[in-house]
Amino acid sequence: MKTQPASHGLKEIPRHVAVIMDGNGRWARQRMLNRIEGHRRGIESVRAVVRTAGELGIAYLTLYAFSKENWKRPKVETATLMHLLGTFLRREIGELNRNKVRLKAIGVLEDLPPKVLRQFRATEAATAKNTGLTLILALSYGARDEITRAAREIAAEAVAGRIAPASVDEKTVARHLDTAGVPDPDLLIRTSGELRVSNFLLWQISYAEFVVSPTLWPDFRREQFLDALREFGRRHRRFGGVESLPRA
Ligand code: IPE
Ligand code: IPE
Ligand code: MG
Image 1 (cartoon, rainbow, N blue to C red):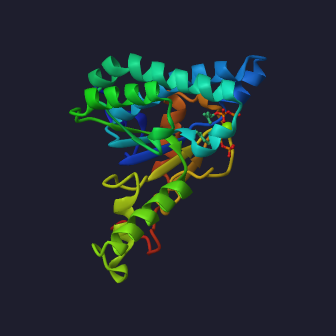
Image 2 (image 1 turned 135 degrees about the horizontal axis):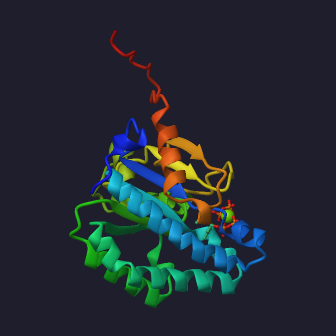
C-alpha cells in the first residue's frame, strides 16, 4: 500500500528537493575503512531517499553526486566513484522502472568516462517514459560552470542575431541552464553538517529553504529524510513579500 504523506506528519510536500550528499569519507574514516566504503554505503542512502521521494509524491529530486571540483581528488577515488556510478546505473534500471522514476542529469556529462556515459544514456532512455519522480543526478556539475556555459550560448545567439541583448531576461538565462524546464528547488538538504553550498545550483536556490543535517550521508536514510521534510513544513516562506496570515 502506498504511504500517505499525512501519516508522516508532513504538512507540505515540496515539489523539488535538492540534496548535497556529503560525508561519505568521514563515515568511512570513523570506522577505519577506506573512503570508497563510504561511497559504497552512500549508494544505499541514494536508494532509500529515491524510494521515499517517489512514495511521497515529490516531483523532482536532484542529487549532487559528483562536482566539477571533485576531479581534483586522487585518481583512484574518482575512478572508483565513476565505476560505482556505472554499476548503479546498470543495476538500478529495474528498480527505477518499478518505482516509475525518470532519470535525468545536469552537468558536463562528456567529462564522464565513455563507458559510464553510455550506461547513463541507456538508463535515461530506459526510464524516459516513466511518469513518477524525476531523479536528476548532478554529474561533473558546477553551478558557475553551468551559468558560464549559459552566458556563452546566449552571447552566441546574440552575435548570430537571433536574440536582442536588451531582451535577455531571467527567463532567457533559466532556459539556457542545465535545469531548463525544471522548477527551482523548494528545499536544499546538505548532510554531514557542513554549512556551504559548494557550487551547487547557485541560480536555482535563490529562494530554497536550507536544511543541514548532522548525519553523514551513508547514515542518511528514510527517517532522516522525513525529518528534513518535517523541518521544511515548519518554515515560513515569504519570497521577499509579507506572509499572508491564516484566516480567523
Ligand atoms: C560525498 O562525500 C561524496 C562526494 C563528494 C562524491 P565526501 O567524499 O565528500 O565525504 P567527506 O566530505 O570527505 O566526508
Ligand atoms: C559537494 O561535496 C559535492 C558533492 C556532494 C558531490 P564536497 O565534499 O565535494 O564539498 P566540499 O569540498 O566539502 O566543499
Ligand atoms: Mg565532502
